[in-house]
Length: 490
Length: 55
Image 1 (cartoon, chains in turn blue, yellow):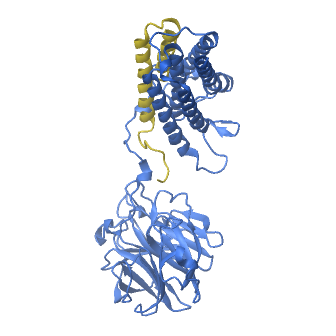
Image 2 (cartoon, helix red, strand yellow):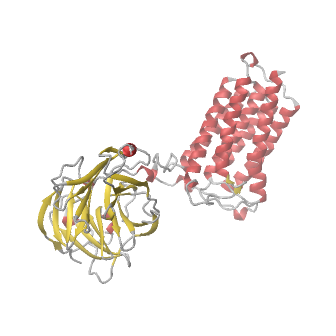
Image 3 (cartoon, chains in turn cyan, brown):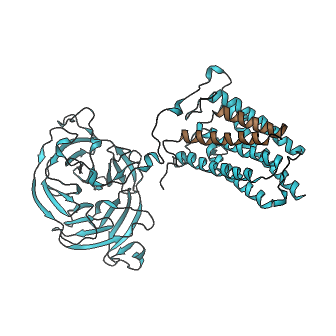
């Protein structure tokens, strides 16, 4: 009695699996609506068919361990395929996806859910099985079980027809972007594009390495821009106030005549001589939003600062002489009573999405925060991103070009600004100034035209990490706290 | 190759239904189908085998 119940449930499961996802996909979506699966959808559909086929094996031969093992393996693989496919589209803008929806959900997401249901179903059936029910000889199929096998054969035959039309005989394989299904051979496209040479990678562009200023080529003679005028260093100073960690950025606030300095986890307000710490804190960067290592810093107003991590996550602090030390315990690792944390979140980008940043700047005229990308081994593109201070959301992105009347030229046909490694930025008078650790180049970008209107080479730089503007001077900081002061010119 | 895979599954199911004594052959066809499915998915995703998201 119990055994018959299990086989009945299994037959029903095979029928449901064959009819609902696989049969609907081919006879309704495919033959009626012309939908063609992409190559990944084909394999997800194949995996479901294989699980149903294993069900038929169990109906005929009993629950042998190799069937159970294979069904679990294919179910687990199906879950992985579903995650891989959903991962391509799940984070797009609302309503976007690939191919059609069923009940408001795209087919690849249904596949993920169906594999999960398959594994749950297998688990339920296994818990109902008892060892004596293992049998050696083939079973005689009951009517429902035979019906499940026949339905499966019909559905698989339909899939074979669709697969022949859409993907062709071997060695042709399904396409990444399939064309609409048709029974007319003149509309069939059989492709070998999936065999094309391409690098094999676990994570592709998502495996981009975090930035490291030391990889920047400092050689001034090999920069992408030809014949740059040189700005001489007129004096040097250094940050003598004690810091925990090395300097990662520098900013200046004229109203308070103070500097802001960040280290990997530290935020310091220093006096104008850079010798005395006025207030500081060490951020617990791993608490809540992962801030990574701070790489950019800016004053948002005379008493509010922002520190931006390499991963474009940020924290905003407001100075407060009477901050609640106990309340701040969860945010900070040291110096709990000098700031209030008023925001900790992430900047989202589009063009800059696959790149890190090592700079931040604030434009009080437009109340905007700017970041500039640094290249990595997977993506090399200089992208400037602007975020609105009011909602800390991306408002603009641009890839700067050379202004036609700036007198700037590239040193070769294939040279570009993407070779630069921007590690510090500051805004003044509608212009974004960006210092590159690569080749010691200082760019001047007009924020209205998005063009580079001037570029200079600063002599003697050694992997700078920060840039600040103080009156008519640039302050260029190195990681060790040494600072080169250069006259500001357009 | 997807067409071949469905032909293999059809043949395996046909054996299970009509020639159950040839279980070994049917199971080999089933395993071959699994291998082809895994190979084709890996071929299609070889430039980023894992889901493209942050880890």
